[in-house]
Image 1: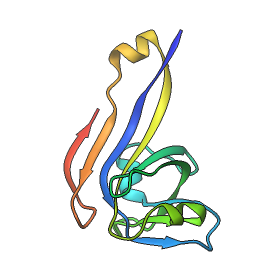
Image 2: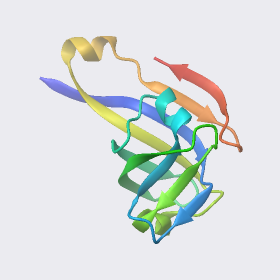
Image 3: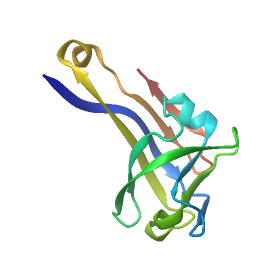
Image 4: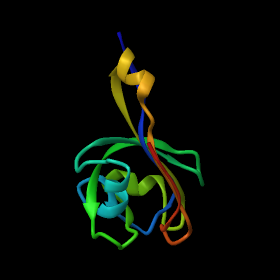
Length: 120
């Protein structure tokens, strides 16, 4: 048996840009994505704290240190700069892995700087 558990979470990420003309995805500053173990093109679930929208897309890396959190393509219709997002990924684990698993979680401030790391 396997169970799906939270693998990575970036909480309270502030949207810094949106581009409807881009091919879809969510740009995340590479240093933030790497801190929680998100890989380029990894499937993510995103919740917009401002309007309740939830959507799935994938990660693309933005410039490290930029604090970039950008809605691209169709996702640009689901939020706007200044909105706060929760960005999550999940992993399927067997019972032994699940018993030891701790998700990697960071909380960001209004400048997308890490204010609370809790990396498992």
